[in-house]
Amino acid sequence: MAAFGINKIFQSMVTTMLFLLAISIGRYCFAADEDMLQDVCVADLNSMVKVNGFPCKKNFTAADFSSLAISKPGATNNTFGSVVTAANVEKVPGLNTLGVSLSRIDYAPGGINPPHTHPRASEMVFVLEGELKVGFITTANVLVSKQITKGEVFVFPRGLVHFQKNNGKVPAAVISAFNSQFPGTQSIAATLFAASPTVPDDILAQTFQINTEDVQQIKSKFAPAKKF
Picture 1 (cartoon, one colour):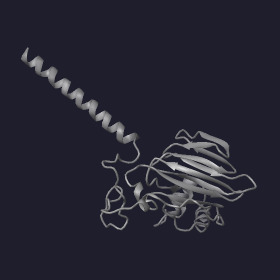
Picture 2 (cartoon, one colour):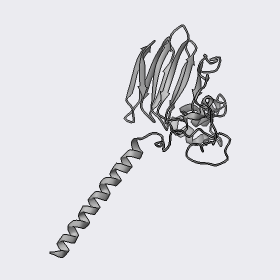
Picture 3 (spheres, one colour):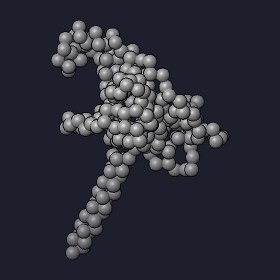
């Protein structure tokens, strides 16, 4: 009987531990940035200490929580006809540990924000001006796409490939909201064809079912990838 009681206690402890582990794993699988542990932790962008985020600086002011970074349209005179202007922790140090940030995206007529992903955040866009064709692709290769207009919002789930394109004859602009202070961006084409060191030509040729000459031609069109 004593052994039976010990086994019951042991089973109960194991069940409790597995339950707590499941909660812990679930939290870290679905959460974005880590939870904050104090009122503020204004980023010390000059610190040499490397942590998951930025160290807190000792003294801060209201200016650390404010920015005009996305107050004006960005220049869209580039290959893709679009520009992303970030208001993330690098521009607003007070965002450190708060798990939110914004960006502004401006599009020339016909401009595109090419297929890309945000590995650390979901995104919601609000159309300021114009109209856009937007969409994302699920892991089952299903395209979810829609034309959105001024005043409309659209959500891109975390980590999924997505895009926006201005098919109109006038400029367009959106404000993007992220559940991360630093969502990160991986542009699919630039990631593959402008990596440093470069992805081997034979890997790309076999992946896209083209020849190495085509790969080299595509690579020549891309400058080194930018970090956002």
